[in-house]
Image (cartoon, rainbow, N blue to C red; front, side, top):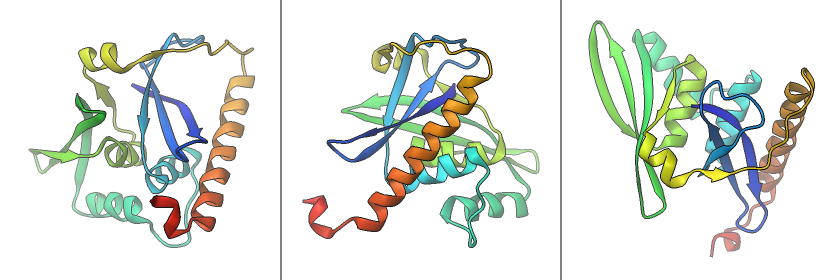
Length: 171
């Protein structure tokens, strides 16, 4: 799977990661929306844009720990969907030994992006949860600029939300 982009649900104020089949050309016919927290969305978008924080955030710290311990992220598998929640595993390899670790898809993807690891989605889950899209193909070259601009806007929206959130917003 590839990250097609992000959306921001203005009603729930939640970021939504949009996954598409790897290598699928525009126009994308189906996307899988995965709702996540603002911190996780920020972590993924920042990594995609190559933004380095002045101090390591949680996902940066985890990625640095893995590198220091010579652990490699082999893959992320989004394997289940139950009652509106996706479930994933992160497969690590260290010194020839593989470890499969339960993870939220958002955290697993945030780490995978930092290590250029592939993300897989079970075909039945894709069929069950993907939605049709009306994304229109853009001329060559402009889609990258448009995607970067959209991600920057989403990152700004998430930042604004994080800066202005109040405890009463979660009731």
